Amino acid sequence: MHRIEIVYCTRCRWLLRAAWMAQELLTTFEREIASLSLCPGDGGIFEVRVDGAAVWSRAADGGFPDIAELKRRVRDRVAPGRPLGHLDRSDAGPG
Amino acid sequence: MHRIEIVYCTRCRWLLRAAWMAQELLTTFEREIASLSLCPGDGGIFEVRVDGAAVWSRAADGGFPDIAELKRRVRDRVAPGRPLGHLDRSDAGPG
Image (cartoon, each protein chain N blue to C red):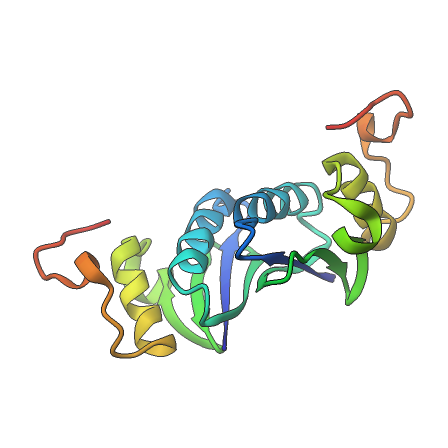
């Protein structure tokens, strides 16, 4: 069971996208997630962490994750080897 | 700064209402909340905890909280004495 955190900048008003991604991850990885925490931050932060390790950082990765790419990165930590269906296809594109 | 948890039954499909309440609380108590965690559970659980203490439990309180009542209970722990505007009026009713 894993712990996920999404830290988002409140002044940038990124709660809605953080909450959307939270629901996507909780739906896809329902049995692997012990808790998904939404954490208000500032300074333009948008970071997704699995068990404390950043799998997406706006500062390092540039911008926001495509939801398919985010699920692949989370999958690699919480359920490595599990197929994600169409999200794994190289021609899947975003979404 | 406070930690809030919402534990919800996945088999009952209560993620959406848990995520909605999460966003309501994060919006109202933006500066008081360090993290708001969504925690998948089972057995019909729906429980809201502030710093580990239950402020709403479906088992004990019966059913789901009115969002105004939930905000009052959370307010009493994270920002006691702060007015919540129309949510504090006795004639406010639910919402």
